[in-house]
Image (spheres, rainbow, N blue to C red):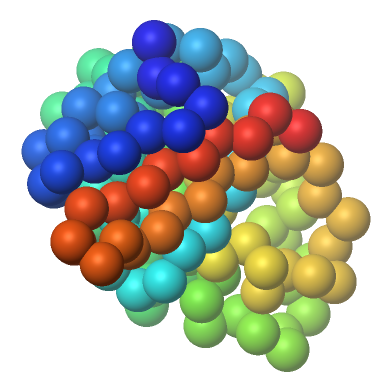
Length: 139
């Protein structure tokens, strides 16, 4: 099982950590991924999708804001990077956060106008040696 603090040496490690993490997820979970561009948030989400049995290509929803996938759980993948200053409630994102969906949000700090209770907050840090520290915080 994924630890509270993990070191990813490469892209495949990050996907594998996401896949391991998926085993503890259930309907209604909301996961907040925080980290700089290129830190591994989308790769981790690809791993979550893989662990949920999703065969579709998973990529960043930066320009579409939301991508949806069906697997063991309904995965709603949100990228809030472009939503800073936007009234995100008017976009209907809050409606996705219900007991029927697993929601993974990249850049959730840009949704500060919503009162969201996260089940997990995961911080991605790029280290000097290009490895990634992936810290899992249960909320």
